[in-house]
Length: 289
Image: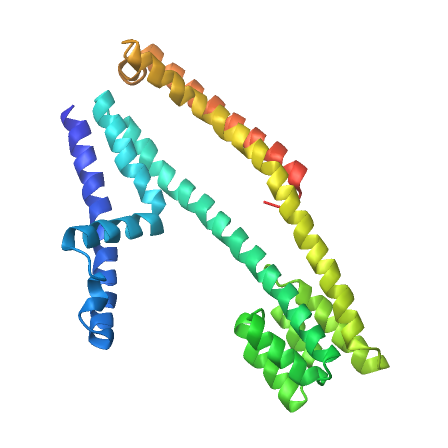
């Protein structure tokens, strides 16, 4: 029991230190806002307690993987064992990796949508009578699809540089692959004099269809992922039911040899089942995930 309490306190202290550092950074940013916007900018008219709760929630929402530690600490206290704390510490990098992958996927999809908007805006400007260079520059500034390569592309447009090569360089980012099609349309229009507006219309239609197909497939896979999540939570529900019936499952799993073996085998089967289910769902969804 003493070792469990000591481990809980150490990990909670580490988590509080991370949250405190993040809070200091946010307070410094707010003080800068006070100097620029006045005293009301720091708290927005609310009380200190409400502001502290909002700051804590913003920090936890920014780094949700650290919530694994207090959750593991509660289980460690309930089971009077430091083993759940070790599992919580191991879960932090795994959860962080999963969250980062989800954020990268969202950024990729958002960038793909901006590329579609770029093609649509450029095609509209061309049909309105603008020249290709000004039309692309206007659409690029409006959509923000070029990102860090925007200055290079606009420089090539304004000073007669290699616009297709600049667009192909911008297309190397995840989600911006459609810019390679825009580069091809531009190259064909320059070399053969073909209409750029018609090519952009066809490119926009193809990119939009692909984006909508991916969104539809992701919506269909949401039910499969929900089923995987429910199946993964069933062992936890079983432990809760056992505790409610007075069977003391945590004591058996964490303090007896047979329970420890069952815990290891169960965790292994749980991990294998999640991996296999995720592989099946991803296989059905292609590169959606």
